[in-house]
Length: 269
Ligand SMILES: [Zn+2]
Image (cartoon, rainbow, N blue to C red; front, side):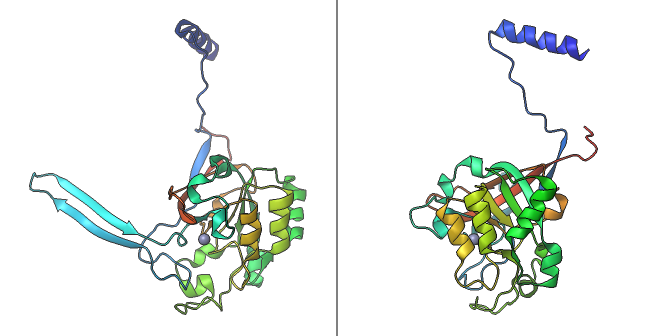
């Protein structure tokens, strides 16, 4: 039956004078949303002068008798689930609109440090965590999106629990886990990964004062994905991530919707 169908398709393609193009079959994957919703509780860096704002412009029946709704929104680039463009920490590097899509649509690995972070809120990913991961799952390939899972997204949107401190205007006493300098160098400079993602507010840990991981990634035109969620739904390898930021021309970052395609465990269609 299938053979007859493909022969028929081939014949149809010949009749059209061009080869049959295969259509990607996504039925063997489940779609997982790795994005927090934007709302009044969306977390921003303590020094951010503004937050996400939604202004209702219309909501209700029109004189013509139909329903109509529209809002205006405003937000800082860096807050909620968002992208860090390389120019955020490196002059002359890529802005949000110019990041090649290949860095944002790519296979992903998930490195799980929830146990280490549970024991130490200032935990930073170490090269030994990467080599331990690679012993089990193989060397991280160039062009991979690395997602660091700390478990911190369960604390969202409690600012004090999530950031370690909720003093407005003061970012000097934050505590949450993230990447460490040597691990970032290994991933960016040796593995040549596409992007660094994490389920906390920054690819640097909360206590960082020099933002060295941001600087390492930005210098190599590697974007960051921050405030991700639902990383527990992803396997260590095998997922495919699509992270498309709002295309802000010249932007140093942008809100981003991040989804993962995860192979169905049973192979069911
Ligand atoms: Zn950011």
